[in-house]
Image 1: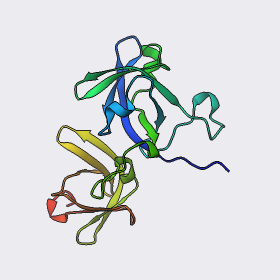
Image 2 (image 1 turned 45 degrees about the horizontal axis):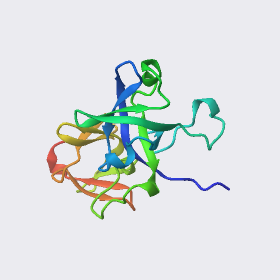
Image 3 (image 1 turned 135 degrees about the vertical axis):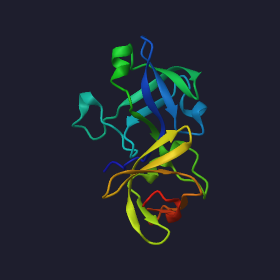
Image 4 (image 1 turned 120 degrees about the horizontal axis):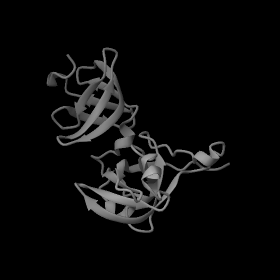
Length: 186
């Protein structure tokens, strides 16, 4: 039986840049030089950290969409990356908004007070008074910082991931504890 490899998100392809197959990449790692250097490889995946199967071999559970870095340059807080598998803008356009992953054993583990962003997906959000609020369905790196998208019965809410709002993240219980007095959940 094949052992399942865990993956972690290190970036997200935003859009094509130019006509030669380059793409802009939003960095979702503190170690971009480690994963986005010429000759390195990353895998296409989902926001939950799951590997996407290669379109030519979707029936094979071991197939992976693997991308190899050709060259990199800095761009507005992120990178412009040319992958070998994207020969032109048309090919690059098909990768828009895809997450880029690496095997979890290749990254530096988070400190005790840190969490991988993809680990937040699917966590229950609970108020510090015990109120059930919803479930984390996504996250965004906005100019004001990381923001969680929380699905609620009354509609989705965006929750700033800051100490004044997010009080605790319990990975074992899969719960994000938030400050109810923040006014976000009224």
